[in-house]
Image 1 (spheres, helix red, strand yellow):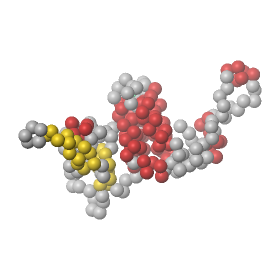
Image 2 (cartoon, protein in one colour):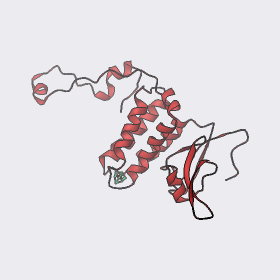
Image 3 (cartoon, helix red, strand yellow):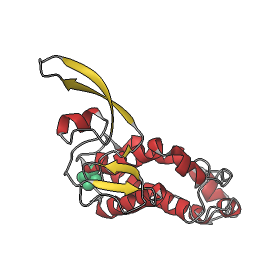
Length: 209
Ligand code: SF4
């Protein structure tokens, strides 16, 4: 396809149906039902090199044909960088009508951006997955799934790369919340914005979600 990989490069992953489709690893073995010439159906284990590029086969493999915009990634690609690039697009394109999509797409982008800049904390892969899980199926249009599926699948399929960029210790708990009564009575309550909480900075995480 399209001239193949550059010389010396190995296939790492494929996103078969546009950036919202779930990513498939090159070394994955997929179990697909294949129709035989006599009409019987058998289950066969195949690699992504052999997967038929049709709607049913890609859906059975856990992804989709989607827009048909195939993205091929070779072994020079950093998967956190790739996901951040995708997240940036969806965070920008969300229309903002539904809270899970509006907030979640931006949170996912901020986290992958922080991971790329060396501030990833241990909890980040889990947080990314949780945000994705709480967007998909909770919005009024399919953009919710479109922005959640890349994060869900990248974190699941490339855990080692995400863990490698999430090495900082967990930041300390955020300052306690105050009741409205305490806020009226207590003049000395700190008004430092949570986004600049020094605890997070001490833990090496510049900026928070
Ligand atoms: S899911 Fe659709 S309607 Fe809702 S905020 Fe996202 S783009 Fe807008």
